[in-house]
Length: 223
Image (cartoon, rainbow, N blue to C red; front, side):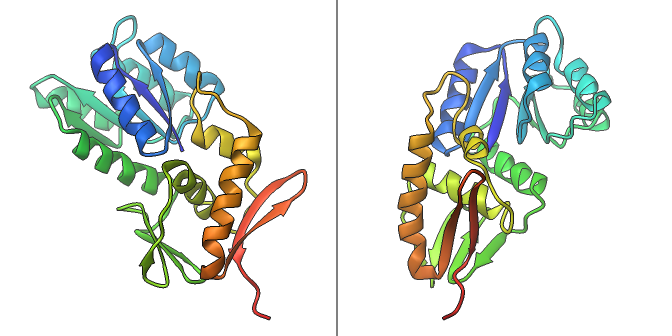
C-alpha cells in the first residue's frame, strides 16, 4: 500500500515515514502543498496523511484541489490548531479523519489502518482456505496458528488478499512495497512471493504465477 506523507516538520515527517515503512507500507513524502499536488498528479496513493499548516499551499487548499480533480484517496489530516473550525472545514472538504497534534504514533497507525481498510472496501477479516487474515491487527492465522511473516511478506499478502480473484502485476506489488528513492527490483518481489507461497501451502492457499501478467491468490483446488 502506498502512503503519501505531507508534512513540513522534518522530524515529524521522518518519524511518520519510518513508522509507515516499518509497517510494510510504501511511504513517500512532500514538504509543501505544491509538491504534494505534483506527486499526486502522477501517482495514486492508498492514503494521504496531510498536515494543514503547510508552506506555499496550505493543507485545506491541497484537499480542495484533490477532491475537485476527482482524487478519492482517503485523507487523514493533521493539525496543531486548537479551534474546531479548521477540522470541520477539512471534513466538509472531504477529509476522512483527523488528528490534533501532539498525537501518539500508535493512534495514527491505528487510524491509518482503518482508512486503508475502508479504502479497499474490506471487512475486519478476510479468509481464503485455511487462512484467516485480521485486517485490523494485521495478523495472519493458518488453521488458528499465527503465521510468521516479515513486514514485506505481510505487504505482499495484503496486496494479494485485497485483490483476491484478480491478477496483481509485479509493478503493482513494487508500488505497494517501495516508495520513491527506495531500492526496488522485480527479483525482490519474486523472492517475497516464493517465501509467502511456501508459508501459505499448508493453508490450502496458492499464489499462481500468470506469465507476463502477475500473480493470483486463490484457494488450492480440491483433488
